[in-house]
Image (cartoon, rainbow, N blue to C red; front, side, top):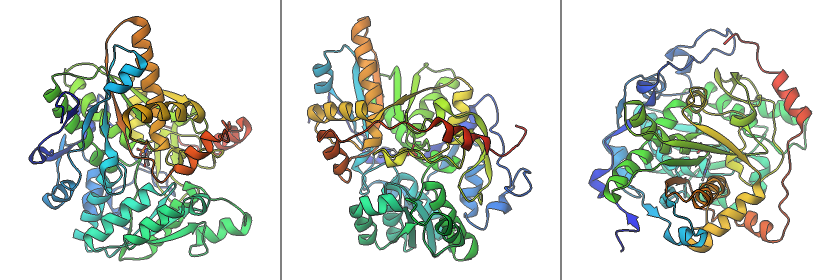
Amino acid sequence: MDATVKYLLDETRIPKDWYNIVADLPRAPDPALHPGTLQPIGPADLAPIFPMDLILQEVSTERHVAIPEPVREIYRQWRPSPLVRARRLEKALDTPARIYFKYEGVSAAGSHKLNTAVAQAFYNREAGIRRLSTETGAGQWGSSLAYAGALFGLEVRVFMVKSSFHQKPYRKGLMETWGATCIASPSNQTEAGRRVLAEHPDTSGSLGIAISEAVEIAAQNADTNYALGSVLNHVLLHQTIIGQEAIEQFALADDYPDILVGCTGGGSNFAGLVFPFLGAQLRGGRRVKAIACEPAACPTLTRGPFAYDFGDTGHLTPLVRMHTLGSAFIPPGFHAGGLRYHGMAPLVSLVQELGLIESRAFKQTPCFEAGVQFSRNEGILPAPEANHAIRAVIDEALRCKEEGVSRAILFNLSGHGHFDMQAYIDYFAGKLEDRSYDEADLQAALAELPKVAA
Ligand SMILES: *Cc1c(COP(=O)(O)O)cnc(C)c1O
């Protein structure tokens, strides 16, 4: 192996702690509010659906949170993930830029989501929980939690957005292989699902509806908790293993990134890569330019106001202050199922408000074009979500060429796209449409934002 191309860490150097950016931010995050009283919630309000260890991580202000040894032990199955220099892509672009990617597709589930699934399953089992319920869009989170449940002996029930349930039978097959149950949402197993079905029997479902179903099951059963694959502070915390490893790997490469890039659905893979570097910057280290890449059809960071909103359609979850398109917003169809959420992680929203990151929105066709160009040079077939990051990376690399400057660009290759081949097939057949959201639908969803003085 050519050590100038790939930077592998010894597995004994898997970080011992997760990094909490709250300790280094110039201001505290806004509190989450109770959906009924609109007053700040306390740990007890979340106890019916989350274990106390995760609730305490959610509100922690400590810079470091120790990774439990049983979790680190499982991380060794695929971590440290490789940091790769994309030399062939650099050559194809004829750019002086140094392009690196951190490859999270090496996990069993094929994406970064297993980093938090394993941690969440561990803490739930420690708390005596027997069953986890969750939602999934494209299926990456559902399959990650299914495997984590298998590792810790937990039953897992996944509500999968109905359109994906029918379009992606292989993800369901993977969940079932790992012992989980996968149900099309909306379903008639919950009050929230029955209510939607009564009004819209032919609905294709949405993440917001599936979350309502999963939360309802958890709230009603003492032995069942809910697990979320993105957005929340503790999820972002668990993903910081990515950026911390990257910092060590860059030291091995004797380099340091000038530009960091990640795609953003709920914000977890982006934060996982970027927050440890931002932390170093906030403590007096080198400045980095960080770019969050989102779909133009669901432009949370570039179009959504920074406002209090519900996390779900059924309004069962607490309100959090975030960039949001409104909980009633349902984006038009596009292939990056992991980027369809109406909101954005409160911490990613806050770092944008603080001017620490910037965001860009991309239509899907140019993203697939970038993903294919990447694949033809580096071999790996990226998840459609990650193609948004690759689009921005190629744009930045071409800018380096124009300006005649060599910058180091690092992006998070959040997962592989082996279960998304239909999207690639549609792209090659010229069937991919760049559908735009309806401006009137967006305005209607924004008009329904809860009235809370921020
Ligand atoms: C879920 C997913 C995303 C989007 O979620 P984030 O929380 O924003 O990271 C991106 N890429 C892949 C491969 C995913 O599975």
